Length: 160
Image 1: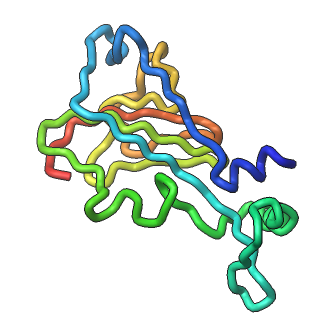
Image 2: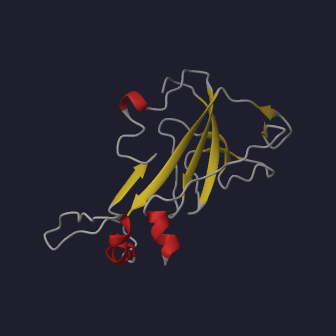
């Protein structure tokens, strides 16, 4: 249908509403952060021609039928973060100094995902964005179901 096609064509987004009273560790202790980063994970299903080259279309709607065929394979041709290859690398990397407290919000509109902080862990994790429930603690990797957004709070122990 049209809704899945819109999602895999990048026509989606996430809104995460943080609690008015702030974040808490599940035992009543307030958690404050120095910065917040957003990671939007997106999978694309781009049709190929008979020679294996990606097809081009005059208008987005012209790709509908071919895109649906690729979608039905459940195997994306591309997975990117924040809309483009390299969007979070090099000069655009998400950086933090030792001791900085960072809240990372991660969304995936279509498929399940499992964020992992290399060299670190989520001190506090709200994998489904439900801030009224106590967070999971000390998570190396956490599960975010497709169509959801989660958040992880981390105090950096090394430059990153």
